[in-house]
Image (cartoon, rainbow, N blue to C red; front, side, top):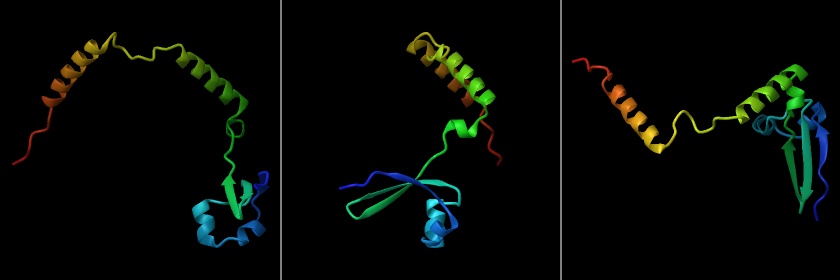
Length: 106
């Protein structure tokens, strides 16, 4: 039987329960939110990741939302009409790159 997960805030008391090496590997710091689950005698601690609302201002979120909406308009396929056009471009690009190889110094 598993318990319902609960969220706790890492405090200095919480940190003293774990050796320093474990805390470093887990990345626990005071003030972090951690979800705790218990099932079958096993306790699992999962750091709660910050949500975008916590990381960006309202103005930054509006800018990001507008840029995503513009990107969704396309084009997604790139500047080529078909695979043959891409292949021809890539062959020409490869030829131009191979002719500009640096000379070996003897």
